[in-house]
Image 1 (cartoon, rainbow, N blue to C red):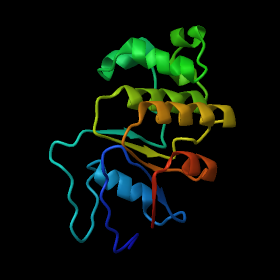
Image 2: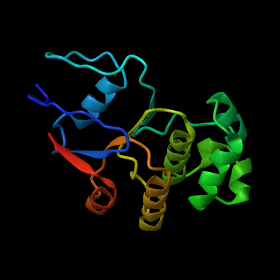
Image 3: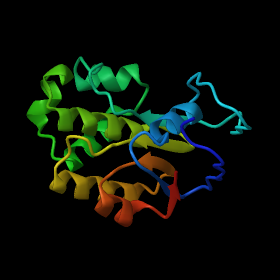
Image 4: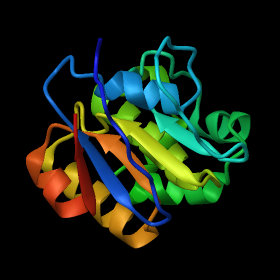
Length: 170
């Protein structure tokens, strides 16, 4: 058993941090909400029309150039690149293959893509892996500006304090 007796509702505009020790089921819960086929007991309900954007911990699948990436994911390329510029991407990076990016740059690509998607709920699993302090502050600013409804797992206490409107402890 990973976690038990958990119940919560996500309201529009909330920024919810899932908190708990390693192995407590935070990532599993996020994957369940995203629709991964995980075994569980109890009742799980989410809106049938709910659109979710998921930022996983894994960035190893990223490849190709940013223009093709935006096109493949059906997001607005100019908005996508504008967000990346706010995350300190240089125009030179726009021409490089994503597979050559650092771990932090790849994470920024996933975050920018998520913020471009027209969804009801953003689910981010440890978005600050490989991210430096300046970038963390830039991501905080983007989240406060965009005001998405977001459920996230993050071990960076300062980020959680600055961003979360509610904390759910597992």
